[in-house]
Image 1 (cartoon, helix red, strand yellow):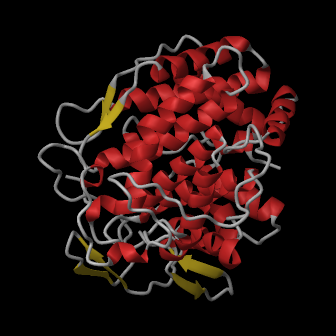
Image 2 (cartoon, rainbow, N blue to C red):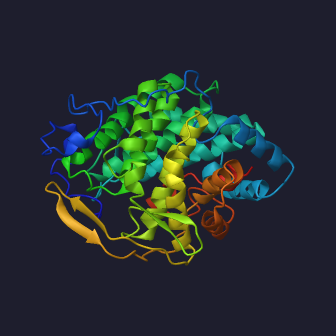
Image 3 (spheres, rainbow, N blue to C red):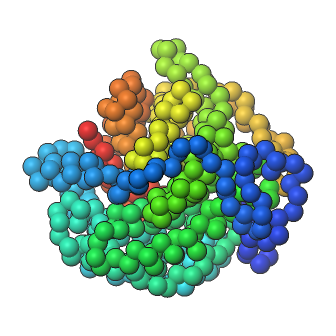
Length: 421
């Protein structure tokens, strides 16, 4: 059983998709979250957040990113060209990739797991889409569109114990971003794809962020909230849904769960060199999940930025301070740590962590280039530790380059192709 989750229900159906029992006032802290029905909508709005004119493509990449990569790759300028070589060497980027769509995708313990089929197909669709955008070779667009169309005409349900919430979040934001990049391609069935994202992924994202499986609001680690928040925002952009976009922005700023930036970065510090650091919520758990969470929050901020909303800088650059903290520790330097306590389970049992956890310290995930090129090149901030972590990772690969298990596919990667300025 994953340390993240409660024991799965016998039916495998998470409780937020059933009638929602009282959480003894815990959910009252969720400002503006509707509780009408088992999958009540997140209706809280952040005034003026949603764009009046949507930017497309406007998820994790915008036209400037794409055009710059196209020019630099053609000129064989690094790091763009070096990353391009890693991309084209990845088997997922081959135009011969064949989709393996399923009617139901399951993530959880046991023999029913088939979610590996979905995340491999999503990464193949993304990598082929990049190859089309940068070279104009439609054989890759055709491959990506065929993958998306096969899934949108087949997939009807997600299933599993609580790990299915991770499936809905991680693969939700990724798939929606592929659709966003392909939206103008003639061979891509945008309408069917939008319906799949709205009917299959969104109810899980919304249900988790609203009810958290009827557990104590602090029970789930930040990365659970963040991947579902990223999916909510990505679906909003794909479907031009202002209510969903505003709900995502509001949750980032003031949500009750650990994905809200003030809970993901609960304590602020200043190190001996005068750098502001923000203790990450999972720092006392391990470093693999801390780095994962940084990557997920980065995706949320990048999508919002490309629609004209600055979450990167929200609350005096609070996320920046959190990223600096995680980066500093993972390049081998010491960081301060304040005892972190929380309630878990359905009864909010008390837990605390008194020291940072060095498990998986120095873990390599391709999430840092996006942050470095935003905070340093766009905002002009001294991101000493983020840059050091970015340098440690080096040229970023993507899915298939960081191991065969699901952790190697939690992020798209290739940031040194798409984000250098």
